[in-house]
Image (tube, rainbow, N blue to C red):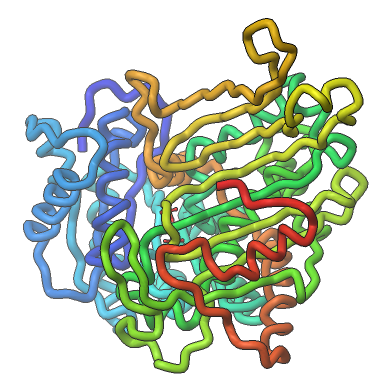
Length: 493
Ligand code: BG6
């Protein structure tokens, strides 16, 4: 793939995607690669090897790439000769992941492409496959000398879930670490690639307005809501293993919580930031009675009738798997003791959005109590679909009366003309290619997240209480409202 105006000094490399005919690759990876190429964020010597189990040809895969770009890319496919050249850089290799002999042919193809594209043996192996294949594929890569780690680099990208609990995550980590050193393992959490999540540190550490108040002296509580309107969408068997706790809380929500609560790092380098995040994860506590789990029943979402979770394809009728979780966590350290962190996520809720809400403490009402309700200040970080920052404060109502009303300042980043925020996968792939791993999770982050989640899951095993049903299209079981109301607070919607 030749591109005339490359600005960056990225190393040449081959990008190998295992699971090339899967949903993730077609929905996210192909469009992301195209956008990176359009933005000059790929090296000039670059090729993609799409590895899949299905019988396909390179021409088929190139057609698939164009189709997925046409449908899903944020930048239009232009069909210029440069664009066609980019597409010609995609090659297909059919492989049964357990056919050890055939890896030899893959190795030959990579060597041949190394020569053709002058990529010097640098490789990204993106494992967009079911988790049970991660370790066997890594082992074959190693056995066939595809990751020599000498005079060249080889990195592996692993999609979630990274294990199902601490024990399985440790086993997986041990297996992968036999082939790849920690600094070459990129564990993806696609929430870390979202623009506003990346903005969190800037907001906190680049504004005098916020950082001095970011503690238990001024903050009453924090809410994080990741609400989805979709159900499990045909992913029943996966979801039966995961549930909302492992699917959303263990990774995306705890990563965000860590970024919200961490201390300022000594430096902006990868390890300094990760060190601070780990400290938060280690300080996390939760009590069993502060975790509510729900499961959607039939209902109406987006004006459409939807079925119950237990009626979904390949989900057992007596499933006790949760599609909703609300919990109150505590970060037991000097900065945060006494400040509850309420987390809530669920499928088939009324609205799709992800938000972080920082609720500041109320001021004593001694001065203004007769002049209206004195609401606490709120800072809302909107992660999606709107990206922005909303600040609510109190002001005088215009007129002769001295009454007070809440007013707001609302910064919407993706409403600004000319701002077309890159998709999370663009930023993440770009970082893998340039060897920057800050937006990926280090092993000890994964480890401590599992410790937290395992404690909850173990409690559930001993707890005969079943998962609480909620109608699809509602905000989850009423127990979730009760959880926060008993503390004299409300979910912000
Ligand atoms: C994935 C989960 O990690 O995140 C899905 O497996 C979930 O169940 C998805 O729907 C949500 O991501 P986003 O970017 O749409 O909020």
